[in-house]
Picture 1 (cartoon, rainbow, N blue to C red):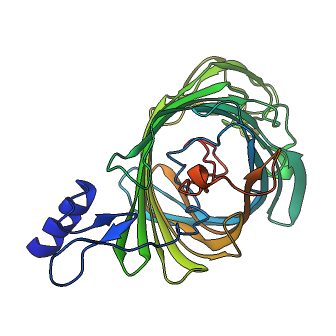
Picture 2 (cartoon, rainbow, N blue to C red):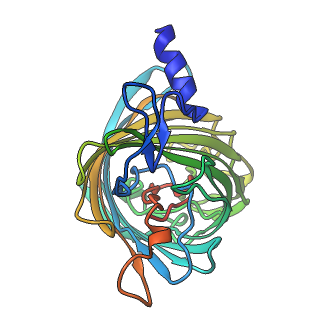
Picture 3 (cartoon, rainbow, N blue to C red):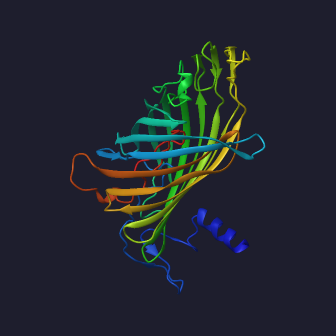
Length: 363
């Protein structure tokens, strides 16, 4: 175990003893030698965003489909219990457009279909606009990590209030709050041996939601006569995404995600339940840890497909879920036919989820 921990530590320090950077390798005799390997093809993992921006004159389009079944919840003690299955089919369309060599813009639109207990509803989801800024470039010829910071704004375009009690929440597709997310991503790709590559990226972020006025049955609970102002708790979290290319076309990816949200409070009248008790709008703080293994197939440097599963492993006051996911990634130039040589090292796709909390990523 100690030996493995040491190896992992050396990896994240980028030690040349264990790994040679792209463009060279260290054979068994310990003498570094140059070996010309083509840059790897990666779509990027499912959840963790990119450490690179999409450069000017390039575009990245990566439609996602998540099919999620919420099977229960984790209680305040961390133990899980079952609830009626709630199914969500979520479609997202993230589009990145390069503005400069060091900045891009991302726009995400989404829609979802929800179903539970024999009722269903099709709804438009939240909209996200994000700006990404490159601080450091990792290239084929340096040992620096790629570092990107981003600021994203979620606009409450989904339905969140005055909902139908008979729909059991299927007609809710948003939170009604403007969420601002600030984050940083660090990434680096290593050649392990004989043109086999290992890519790692880490993302930390925090989320600042605004207060939201609610009436009737809403995202946070309530009843038909609810009239209140809800203050969702701020949140923070982190993701780690890893990829390894099994061949030129095939790769394995995995994400680990941890998220914490502070308690939700409210002011005003929470509403009256059918039994004449007061409805609830507040919620305790919550935590969730999830994992998302996936398989990639890359047709070429511009087009790839990734599919996998995403599921919760542990939590507190949070949903227990399992989700199937698939995405098609396209990265290419707007004004010329092929990817320029200086941009072939940008292995930076992936990084989307129905929450939008972790920011996006360009390929």
